[in-house]
Length: 100
Image 1 (cartoon, rainbow, N blue to C red):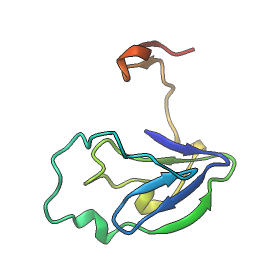
Image 2 (cartoon, rainbow, N blue to C red; image 1 turned 180 degrees about the horizontal axis):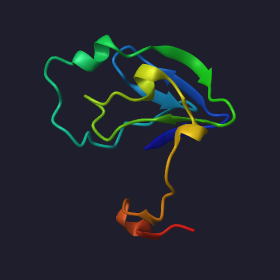
Image 3 (cartoon, rainbow, N blue to C red; image 1 turned 90 degrees about the horizontal axis):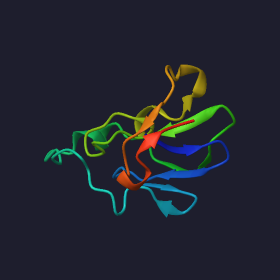
């Protein structure tokens, strides 16, 4: 999932919590996987404070935030690395349908 895009301000805490433009992007969303009890992912998270996402970059996070290796570990993703095109939105259900 794309959590932040060009111009957004991102902070990553050592425990993996992420805020984008001072809003917690994980709060209110449940982790779609069982929490990993040893929290090994925290060993690899690169904490950042107030990083502005540059043009042609996105900050991505996996659905299983307790175990996902994502932008919290390797930083923003260059949009040139994105392969494919979204054609259908599945969630949230009230927005289900084709993307244009």
